[in-house]
Image (tube, rainbow, N blue to C red; front, top):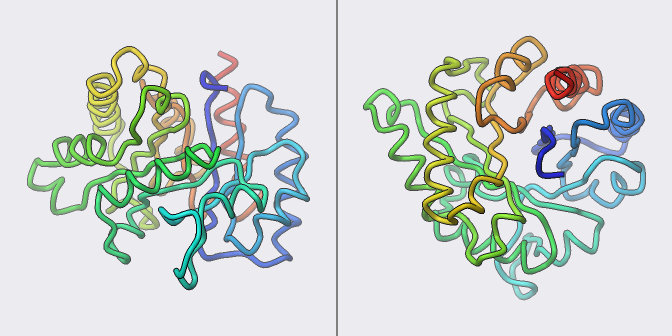
Length: 252
């Protein structure tokens, strides 16, 4: 599946059982797009039900703890996600880094724990508006990649990177195509530096106000291997428009 565009919906803290109708609609439609790998990361309360409702799409968690078990009230371990039916988990989202104070080391430990539990990983990186304005965006993100990526020779087969500029998440603002291309190129260079030739196979997704209107343009940028979609993934109609754009590009 590594060569297919990867379109992932991150529902964040949204969704109750009523949202399973959206899951079913997305899953049914995914069969029409065999050239695209489609997945949803619902809230943890819906992982089991989402896996039960979906036959085609991937199902993931939005975070995991570094430990397999223990006295960590309110946390969810990677083996628990796996047991609930998850195929992968997101780690290092900027909302976790910013609101929960997660460091690059924390993110790397979570990625390692997830892979050890048999989960795939989507590892998020991205700069703040102040860092971009200061001309530090590429160096900041490259440093995050270097310090957050999972360890081990087999790691490149198990994870994707999602570049999400913090200032674009949920704001409607999107970096220019040129900026996206430059950042994805810088991330690729760092992955190759870290993993050698294996780094060329790690998918790099773009995230940050991805919607039907801009999906085709963003997905056509070199080194963009898919999208991590926030608000637009809460509706089957809008999410499938993005999947359809990926399918069209993959067919060309």
